[in-house]
Every structure is written in C-alpha cells, then in structure tokens.
Length: 224
Image 1 (cartoon, helix red, strand yellow):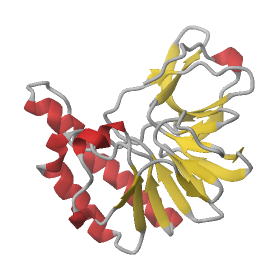
Image 2 (image 1 turned 60 degrees about the horizontal axis):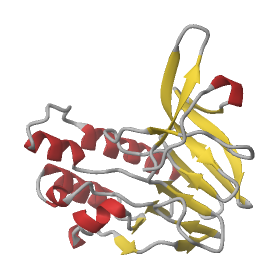
Image 3 (image 1 turned 180 degrees about the vertical axis):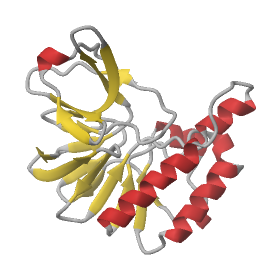
C-alpha cells in the first residue's frame, strides 16, 4: 500500500514495517526484544520464540527489499534484563548476518531504562528527532519537530466490525502531521485508536494492508 506521508512516498508493508523507496530505507518500531524473557523470569507463563519469529521477519524484509539502511523508531529492547541472555545474543547474531545494511536506532522511552544495544550489535544510536529524507523520525508521535513525523510508541490497533463479529488487528495510523507505525514486535499488545476527521487507518489484514472505512471500525482514542 503506497501512501503520501508529508509529501514523501511511503509503502506500508504487511510485516508491520514501512519502506521509503526513494532512499531504500526500512522503518520499524517497537520491537521490545527480551520482553517475553523478562515476563518468564517473573514467573508469568508467556510463549517462547517471539524473538526468533521477529528476526525471521526482518530477514525476509531484507532479502526482498535489499535496503541500504534499517532504522528502528525506538524501543528496540524492552528493559535492562534484555541486555543479558538469549535475546541480545540473537540480535548480535542477526546483525552479523546483515553486516552490509546500515542499522540505526532513534531512542524511545523503553530504551532509557534498557540502555543502548551493546557494540557487538553494530547499531548506531541517536536521540529523536532524526531527520531523514524530509521526515522527522521519532519514537513518540507528538515529538516537537518542524516537519512531518514518522513514529511508533502507541502500538496502534483497530477494531473492525462485521455483521456478527469483530476482530482487532495492527494498523498504520496516518494523521495530517504524523504516520504512526504498528509495533513490529511479536509480544507487544496494542491500543485501539480513533481516527479523527482528516486521519486514516490502514489495517494489516492477512497478506494485505487495507484502508479501513470509518464505518467499519469502532475505536477508543488512546495514548501509550
């Protein structure tokens, strides 16, 4: 699904990522690596394998798009425990397989407590906003900037109503001032968003990204 975001052509991908064709750049947000591991250490029974599934999706994106650069819009790691154990080891191994791709991260709120990824991961880190191809790349959608923002943080989802049932799916949220990406992570939850006049919601539905007509969804405005 191709859209115009602040005058820049952006492709919304079913993998819950965005592609900037002019600069051959992939954008993802909110991986929260190590979140499931942190929950299990606290005795909460959550599924294993979320990190591996997430990195496989990144593998596929890189193989198909061959980007020059991958930029993470914050919350790469979930918390301090993510710096130790299998999640960070898997990230370092993944980075070694894709050493030809430049990888950058704009710090998010979770990164403040988790800390930057270790040098072995080869990820350049900066504070928001980071200006790229005419866009302000941020973690939080309302970061003060002088140009159109692309952000994450909210983990947007939309409830789509059918005649007898409803589903909740990840979505891209396009506002006049910002494009908010869905969480790329496998274990992140989501917050329903309510598009206002002049805004659009694009649902990740199976193998497609589709524009959701206002009449087909009902949502509550939320901020994370």
